Image (cartoon, rainbow, N blue to C red):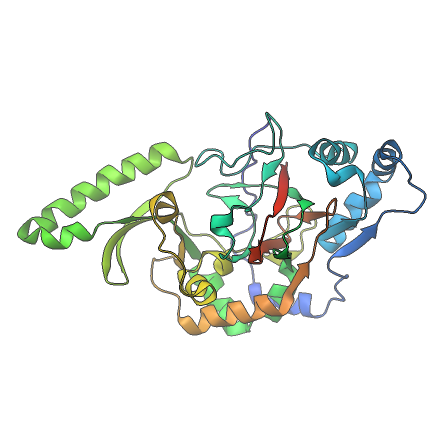
Amino acid sequence: MQPCPVTKWGPMDLDVLELQKQVQQMDLPSFPFELPMPSNLGDLDAQERYFAENKESILASLEKHGAVVLKGFDLTKEPKGFERMWKALGMEACLDPLHSVAGRPVVSGDSAVYEAVNKPSRAKFYVGMHNEMVGKRTVRRAAFVCFKAAEVGGEFIITDGMRMLRDLDPSVLKKLYEKKIRFSSAELPMGFLDKTGPLQPVLEPILKSVIGAIVDMKVDFEVDMFWNRVNGERVIQAHAPPQPPVILHPDTNLPTWFCNIHSHSATLRDERDGVLPETTGASRLNKSDVFYGDGSQISKEDLKHVDEVTKKNQVYVAMKQGDVVLIDNYRAMHGRNIFEGTRKHAVTWFK
């Protein structure tokens, strides 16, 4: 399988307020576009032929709308049939963008069908809205499938990046774009340093250098190590390079919000999740946060505004067995609601 492609950032000096005005004057197409199974497709082979014969129009709808919901198909109720569907559409699978960092489990064997966030231990954690990108790698498209819906909740959630750009307060948008955004992708507790007394200023640069070298060997993108305090505890965080929150879509050249503030902000995450079991182990290591490009804090007011605009534009998709959501990952963000019971959703990423 091919690696996840490198992110296409495009021009980095956009007139973001002018682009916002252009989007505000546009009559944006419906989001998402729904495509129910035609009633005359009786067997699985006929459904596969339908996707092959209509792939141009389906992929054109994906580019136009940003997301397409396939409903009522029997072919996609099982992993093998789901794979037949996206192959009939001519989509080329790629490795998970987390491949170099951590292994996401696959549904079966060497399949390109990865498990979504289904673990019971994560059921009460709301997955915030995000584009699927890790470091310098971003998937072009994705297909999310439901093999079994949760008994309660667990809806797949999507948000249109162009509607996000349209609705953000211009002053907040300008500030975020000009200062850029950087994400903390790992956090290591270092509270013991507070007990080292006069040795602390000697140990800090040594630990920072050693940990930075270890992280550099693990990921395929540059990181900067920053000291910080979280809830009074001394921690060291690995920050990805600064990036713009708005880009021009690599295919349509239309401007879109392309930024994971909603999912990565520790402030917003804590407000959503409330009091949950303490994060430890790998989950603590992978704990994320978001800052301005210079490493300074984004104000709670601006984070709240991003959260409000995101919520305004969220679409909850209550998927049933066999339902598929195709997303243009540069245009649409995705997330997941909390749930109860057993949830079996999966995803395949594409170049």
